[in-house]
Image (cartoon, one colour):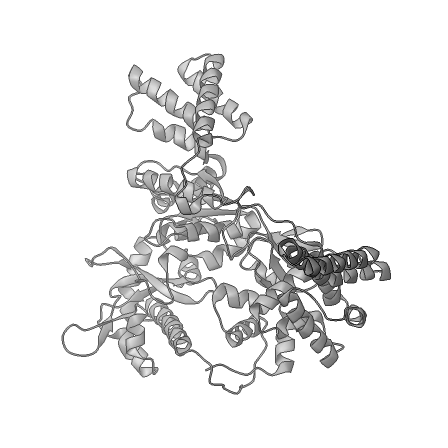
Length: 603
């Protein structure tokens, strides 16, 4: 059920939740004058259009139009209710919320999700306690020692042990009043095929909790320590866990990733733990699935560069090939750390030591082009003339796609030295490849009939904003920043604004300042239940304005707004006069047109 939050507590939570700090936990923000900018978390983009104002405590995306305050940001990003958002921010700020009255608007699934997360947290504590505190956890401790896990690793990653028992969690859940059917839906239990009841899904495994972006346990990874199959087992997809959107260790690594502006991406939990042991704290991993566009966007929101460090075998190289375009499409700068054949990061740290692993990350990473040049040699016999010529041609075609001439020249030089070729010849081949590439891009592709442009205006180009719309926006922006401006406008504007959403925002604003004359505009944005109007208010609050609107400027804006209906009427009269057949009626319309034109021109 939803909750009614006392106004004084709502104010306390709001004032304790700086929007720059809160959004900074999800988006990599950079100072841009008086505001902060970054990549919008609500739509894919490579060029930052997302802006946050610490002074006004609002955000706005100039790309997709999302906007609002700290509460609406979390509601839109996480899909939380208002009360859930306030509860999260209160807990973050260590503010105790009193017992609150229940209302009848809560969604049934909210309670189910909370129960799933509670069950996972209980399971994580149980597994960890079994491993570290009980005699029954001895097999897990022996295996952890064999894998050279330190106590620091065990504590940091909350490593645990699932007993070789069918009902450890089922009994604990039942004792704690949790619905076993919900626990089965969350991936911790399974329903018996014969008879009734449920049994534990994870048994005789070293367990690793998987957390969401808030640090809540939502899934597990388990490594069999006996003969159990499969060797590695991750939780299934559930309402609280989506593999294509979750990266192992992301919540813990986020501060380090942002500080370094760089993330190390590996393939598994053991690789993450090995890298962390070596002092590499900005490390994350996919969870038994290929890198997705959601993974890439999550990484890009937190860092500009991603280092791929996958297994040093054929499958690892193939995974790198597939991951590169996904990361580049999200706007990431990509580099590759190639490990020796047959070694993953965990193996490498064990065989060569922690310092050696850090050294190759710092000094031996390859650019994407360098990796592709090396990768193209795989399966080719460089002693064979045909393979050599094919290799050179493929590299030149790749270089033609590079944007920077310095980079092209650098790799052409390498190619010339490797095969004793004149640079002039290679430059000629590069020019030819660039011409062919340009011709391919410029060849028009036939559009489906429904997609063909219907007018001469270039598709996707922005239409100019009409003068009256611009004037209305500027006045509303001034009013949102200065209460006194609300009264100045209300005295002069007459019938109000022309655009429906502008008029609605104006009406709400006038009502608000009448009711709460001393309240801040942050409070006004929070009071807007209409999400469309809240976004509009956030957009207007982000507009750069002069400190004060002079009487002359105000009069000019009012004039543009009031003239618009008259211009509309004039155009309607012109249209009517054009088709009027009655000469007397036509003459009267012409006289009316002359009068309207004079009236507009004299203003």
